[in-house]
Amino acid sequence: MRLGRTSASVLGVLLECPSIVAGCSHVNRMQIEETARRLVAPERGILAADESSATIGKRFEALGIPCTAETRRAYRGLLFSSPGIERHLSGVILYDETLKQSAQNGERFVDLLASRGILPGIKVDGGAKPFAGHPGEFVTEGLDGLRERLGSYRDLGARFTKWRAVIAIDALHPSRIAVRSNAEALARYVMLAQEQGLVPIVEPEVLMEGDHDQARCEAVTGEVLQQVFDALHAHGACLEGLVLKPNMVVAGKKCPNQSTVEAVAEATLRTLTRFVPAAVPGIAFLSGGQTPERATAHLNAMNQSQRPLPWQVTFSFSRALQEPPLGAWAGQAERVVPAQKLFAHRVRLNSLARMGRYSHELEEAV
Ligand code: 13P
Image (cartoon, rainbow, N blue to C red):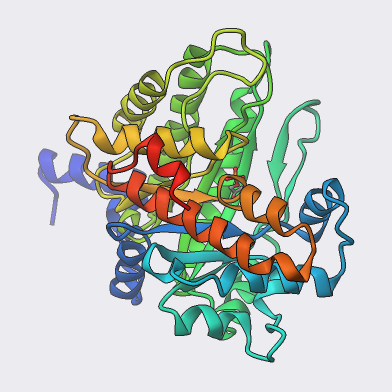
């Protein structure tokens, strides 16, 4: 049979656009969509506790805490057993060691979290490495053997995963090829995670380091998101079964002109509404080096916005949730309870901000 002109051109479009052909054809689509919606459910957000041993080591060292498997276990145990957090946390992202580790009483951390109704997740990227031929830029590695690692993490109880790409800004960067290479790696990770029944958190982080202004952060963040969603479409990812974890649109840390809370919220939402499809169930921000109070205020302002938003807007902070309890604990067993109170307080404040119900006065009500 000969195809008419219209059918032939439709077929041409389909062949060039695998997303229309592949769509969300995974057998586990229902399961990942359900998990993704749970991760961004109202009043809840995600704790990122997936620092590598080297990264947590630097944070421990600044406070004079020795970095051993035992101190890391004690610290993560403190966080995960804090009273009340289960009302505000949907998930916790873990590092390989922690996913396989148990609390001091022998209970696996994965089981402890699951028993509190908190989904365990796992960071699966191999870290941002220097991008060959492009000094000052990075590409995230870790795709080799990823299918097998994802399968074993799922068998250990993980329900979702994270991959972080890092984009640095200076006068000459980022280059288009660095953005495209990172977007491509993110899309390949997403396809593998969804194939294995795990919800991928997609984290393309535009760094705050530098003296660039907010407008430049907005332009770069928009370009990065466009490339990421282009790659996700080209690979046929199930957008309904993932969570986006972007940076907020802020000026560089060394920029003399820092924006107001309202200006950050407005620029961030303007950028996201331009580049993030409505099919994505939720956006869970990283904190990126903002102070805990500032990150909470920005999240709150976004959730108070009059703009109609198609996705849930919540948090997936590491430093902005952990700085107060880590400083209060400082490795001392007798300070566990006050540190847990500070952690639960920070989690609750962000849960309120995630609903647009935070105010600065609540900071004092620990
Ligand atoms: P921060 O909130 O400290 O930026 O960390 C988020 C994160 O998960 C980095 O990968």
